[in-house]
Amino acid sequence: MVSPPGERDAAILGPGRLGTLLAAALTRSGWRVRAVGGGQPEARARLAQLVAGARPCDDVVEAARRGRLVVLAVPDDALEPLARELALAGAVGEGRRVVHVAGSRGLEVLSAAARAGAGTAGCHPAMTVPAGSTDPDLLLGVAWAVSARSADRGWAHALVTDLGGEPTDLRDDVRGLYHAGLAVGSNTVGAAVVLARRLLLAAGIEDPAAFLGPLVRASAANALEHGAAALTGPVVRGDVGTVRTHLDALERDLPELADAYRSLSQVLLTQVAPGLPADQHALLAALLSPSVDTPS
Image (cartoon, rainbow, N blue to C red; front, side, top):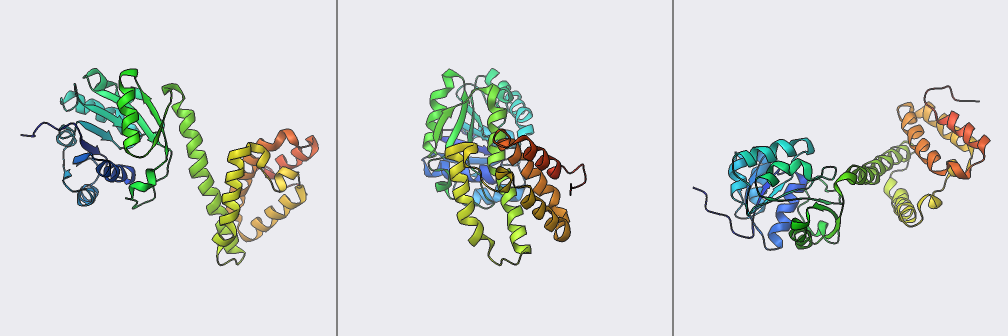
């Protein structure tokens, strides 16, 4: 028989990167993570070793019963069926709070838990979590998007503050745009840096970070402050000849990366198009299109 959870008892369902980091952050802020469920057995075991008192459970329902706060850190598409399973089993209801940490989902995926009487919230940190990260300091000062009903907003904000974050309310109907913005700002920017690193390595630069580090940091900071006005480079200047030189070199030495260069440059061209003469824009658009031959 599982004893009733205390006011600061939590259960983590989903022992992946974020779930594991949250378990460490909750523990440091005075919560007691009593159980971990979901994921693979080895992942549950790793989290249980990291957090004293956390019991790895094969059954997600059993794990959820051990927490007054139930954190769902599972893949986005698994949220709704998991919340439904927990509600049907009576694992969440009056006096329980269910939180998911998915950026693109709102409260609708937790509707079964809400109908069962549980408080619900979607709390998403605007932070990427590298593999193996377990230091709660990673979450200090991070902005969190919070979607919650008025009755739940207070405790949802308090939870984010406990974790060292800064809560900001976000409507359910714009979470898709919100998460798309973060995905572009993190994953796509990261992909661009990876591409740039490969190009420098191919050019014989042994330490690409020495060249890219200051440049990437300054470029990102300027774009955050000034928007499209901070963008620079040959596409922004309408320098068709330089862009053609880039593509010639790529087609000769790294043809597998040429389309990636074109795609990223097309995004850049879209942002700066209003400031370019029409003829330069047309030439660059044709040059960067992967569906036509490169103009001479």
